[in-house]
View 1 (cartoon, rainbow over the protein chains, first blue to last red):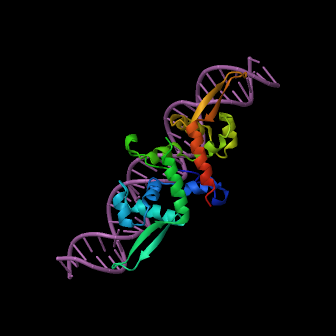
View 2: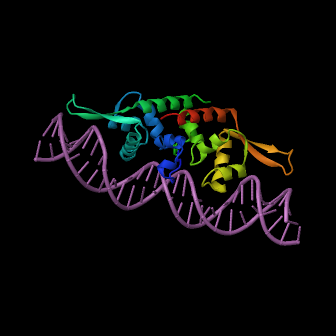
View 3: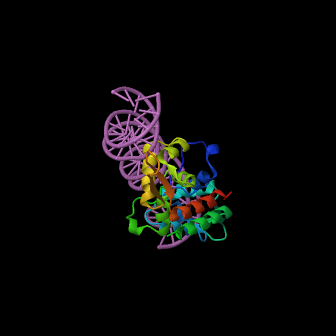
Length: 103
Length: 103
DNA sequence: CCATAAGGTCAAATAAATTTGACTTATTTA
DNA sequence: TAAATAAGTCAAATTTATTTGACCTTATGG
């Protein structure tokens, strides 16, 4: 969903701001997969054809737009990072699920 | 929203199929503008920065995915074409409106 | 000590989307 | 009759997105 990549951010409509946050080849799929928190390598394994560079970029984008957040798990040795949806992320996930239901 | 452009169509998930139908820089905006039926030149005037080639391509894409249909108006002289949302188009427009409401 | 895994980054190459320019056909207004 | 408008098409140029390859750090297993 290449939305409007030329306008400065303030000029974007509300809809464009939301759409930019879910733009990208794998972005919607990642949001659907984050039904529960996942590690980088879990996502890498579960998403067909993705590569670590694209995954990394997409996760950074989602964090920037506050749809996901990192969780640093120290309890386990070795410590590791998990990604999970924020409240906003859950709202968007809900709408994506509704989209799936459109015939 | 560049979704998955590499997979053959059958392999796409339901969500990807919907997202592909609204993919494009101006596509979501066009769907919002089609609250009532519009002519090519109306859309061209109302959408900032679009050009006729991109508009043409987007309208063809939307027709292919059956989100909009053409209406040939013969009553007026000269006859002209209007574009309007289909039922499926209205469903998607509803979800896009909901997206706008996400803070 | 060496290899492997997790979780990345950066730049270059490639692929895909968008824009620009030239052209068309059918009406219509001056 | 000449110019203008509506509604486009096509190919080339440009811009953006995605992929590939090389590299890095910290930690664990053998």
